[in-house]
Length: 261
Image (tube, rainbow, N blue to C red; front, side):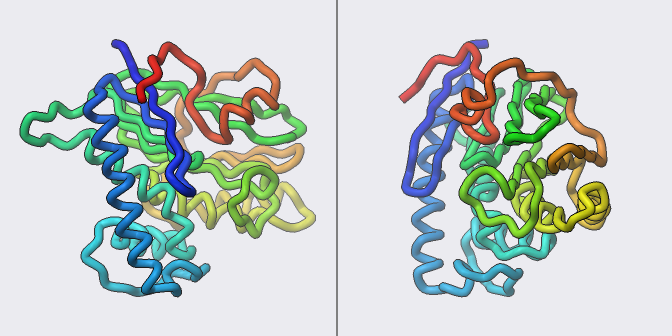
């Protein structure tokens, strides 16, 4: 199956889309533009939604606001902690929905700022970069058809620009969708802190059990790693960390994709 990959920037959104369908990629891009415009207009009038670090109650007809409110409440984080995942989910949805004169994509993968929404009939490889972890934790995950649909998100106190109140090198969450994974990664990463590294990881892993919809979690901090749930199949990535980081924090491994613009 021939796949196409499209990477583009839209203000704060850094997006990669992979599919066998050019039409699906175009639909996903248009969905991002549409949802971002709705979100920008909404937050301009509702600054609390934009700035809150806690869940808030709001009523809105917009699907993106509803998604962010719902899953930020489940994860006990501010709504903007779920924005990248929510955009990825909405893009994925239009790639998979039946519409007149549109055949749903068999391969649909959206990566938005490191948060991933995926629903693919083809085996896909996802890379995780865990920073300067002493265990050299450069690992990849094989996402199979039976794993899908799935959301994957990573939060880190040592890599990237997102705010983390914890001390984890990486907290990766596998969940039923990317909105949930995004919010949960933030929530769980905030709990990985304190002088006792092993205890901090255990505390965070225990907390994942209280969040419905999470399938698995992987946490690394310094010389310790912990996991809970059923992780996708793992493989070791061979290569320089700087090269992997250049390819983005959480992203698709290089493969046989044709660049589509």
